[in-house]
Image (cartoon, rainbow, N blue to C red; front, side):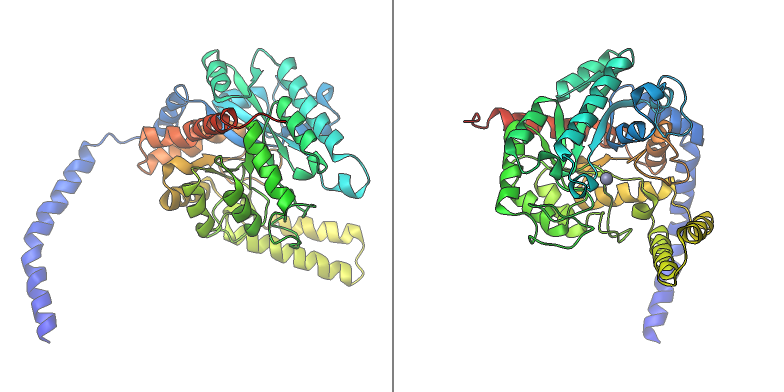
Amino acid sequence: MSGEDSGTRLKGRGVGSAIVGLALVVAALAALPRLAAQDYRARAVALLKTVPLIDGHNDLPDAIREHGGLDSVDFAQPQPKLMTDIPRLRAGAVGAQFWAAYVPVTTLHRGEHPAVYALEQIDLVHRLCHTYRQSLALATTAAEVERNFKAGKISCLIGIEGGHAIENSLGALRMFARLGVRYMTLTHWETIDWADAATDSAKHNGLTAFGREVVREMNRVGMLVDLSHVSDATMVGALRASRAPVIFSHSSARVLSHHVRNVPDSILAMVKANDGLVMANFNPAFVSETVRLYEDSMQVRARALRAGGADSTTVADSDRAWAARAPKATLQQVADHIGHLRDVMGVDHVGIGSDFDGITQVPVGLEDVSKFPDLLAELLRRGWSDDDVRKVAGLNALRVLRTAERVAAESPAAK
Ligand SMILES: [Zn+2]
């Protein structure tokens, strides 16, 4: 009883000061300019005139390839079937885009040359940027990104997606670097000869000795090591082997959606120590745990239908019906991931890696490349400073590129 009494007395004494405090807070809030949603967006767009927004991953090259090649698409005009075109890149104030030179693992199974597929994707990016040179320009260094930005052009950066692209050849890796490739995602969906993937069975307990050699050679030639898609053990192995900052070009926080494509907090701590960068992905199943669980249940149902003898049309119809009822991820949830990444690692290690045109579903509010300022506006609305938003938008990516360039410059020349 005495405890309650003293508590009551304390509360009683606190009432007066609490009222004064509350009045002060109300007065302070009233004095703050009340920004409407469009004002935050305008502030985000204004910020993006001072720093190039650098997106870590966009699969347009492969989408163009599937649509019938570069000549089949007028990229200068709105392309409603795609998430990316020049008018929307401009509306989204995009300053630089890492285009994915994505290499399907099926090339391995079909006996094709993944290296040739990668070359064709790189060729497509070169031709894309040349065809639309009034708006786009290739970049291979942070300084070139800045120069293009000042000239009002969107930089085309190139990242290879899938380490099978080098066909176990460091010579091929070096030549890809000479073609302007500035990151390579060590694996895609499947485990390869020298690295385990997140979404396949582990064969190497992470990286093999050759895998570590690949990482060191990437450091030496100034190619960023991208750990999106790799297993946790590969993440750890690469973080230990790398002398330069690593990136996750399109991965989010696993604590918010338990997908293996996301990064667990224990590894986020290692990324901070490595001075690396995690660029948040917009794939709804990586963003929302509810969506992830729903997609899992869709797969279980499809498997059960197939096991029961259902034909492919029945399975496809069922999939469509389930997809129509699927829960949605939201822009606010992507902002939650960015907030979590900042809380764990600090703001210097957070970026944006949309995965546009590689994903089939999008979060509500982040439908295409024109929506990046809306995401930054949400961070501003949550009280982020202009400087912190600039870091997430592009300054962190520029820093990481610059450090990789320095590590390469200080490395011994190839024999
Ligand atoms: Zn990917």
